[in-house]
Image (cartoon, rainbow, N blue to C red):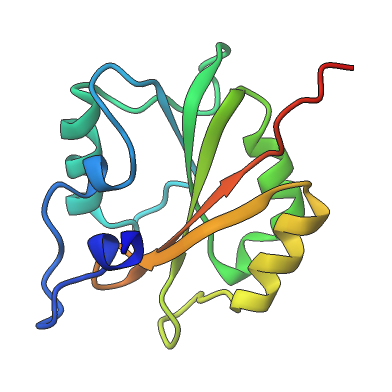
Length: 147
């Protein structure tokens, strides 16, 4: 089951190769939004190892294949954050919303994530623990109908 592949190991140790397990691969352009001092640097390194390069920031100005959005409860309106993360995302791309795990400072209720995703026009495909302190939720936009 995909959920199990993303989970932290039983002792709470961080999983290895998280970037690859998040569906990120070599030369993929990944935009990182919401970085702050509390992010999981080990997870960031694993992601950059998986893409064999640095993540780009919000000023990148070109299309990206994936967005890594770090979000805490006090970061503002999650709907706005999700809509903003769609700005540079290529059709068929995906967003990994990273929120502090339940019980950690800044944690976001799962119901709030689901509601914000729905309002932003996104679908949740999976939610899983990706490190000791962070949960990842994969969000995708519906495919274009080619109007």
